[in-house]
Image (cartoon, rainbow, N blue to C red; front, side, top):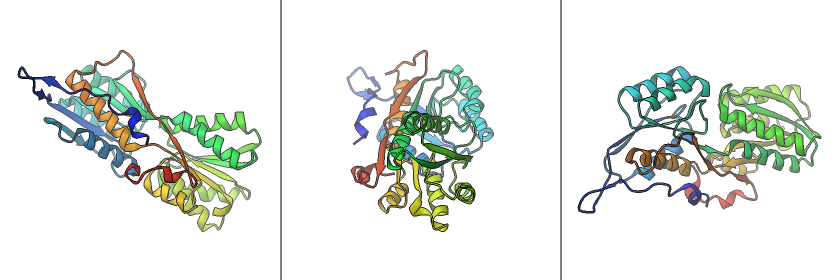
Length: 313
């Protein structure tokens, strides 16, 4: 469905004199915020699928455990070991900028996932964070008939992807639905358990809460658990972001209103192919960061069936 749009950006490696294809050696480091999330696992699966059967190509994954200082140290490990490319999901854009500059200065190509950094690098393969935030606000506002109270479960400070999702959501609500009030916004740390805590605080101080936008699906699921425990799930429309398999199932059950789905397998594959293209010289790095955007899809109870089983991560 969404897979075709961003695939096929890679040519084969070099040619031997006899005409046979010969892939050059390429070592790729993959450094997500943590390996324990459905999204980062789907990216990894997409990368592995795209690189399967490519001779002399390897991917090494490290776990930064949601800590920017660990991610900086692991970037140094990849740089010191002479990797050809690094696929990075920065925990904190500002904190990782120096590491990206160091890698690029050593000739190591850096492709970021979802969160860009402050200086130019090879590419950022990203979800349409701001546009999808706008899409969610537009859809949620329409189902609330332009009136009501909503809250936002935010990403950690410095997580640019979450910041952009929230910006798009706020901008659309302000423009399209001035009758909807944002009555709270708290950091859910990308985490389901923390989101339960945040949602409980929203429920305690807002007797009339009509909607919640959680800037990732883990937090949307936490919000759902808290609302269900409080006996208020039927009154609150909860939206997430990413489109992981467990959230799609909850949408089908009517427990979560919707999510901005992105084909994460495709996103990981696109990043891996881009990295390999740079390694083999099939693609040259531009002066400015190239932005490759994977389009979103509003997955709701009446549309979620359009996402095929093989596209669910």
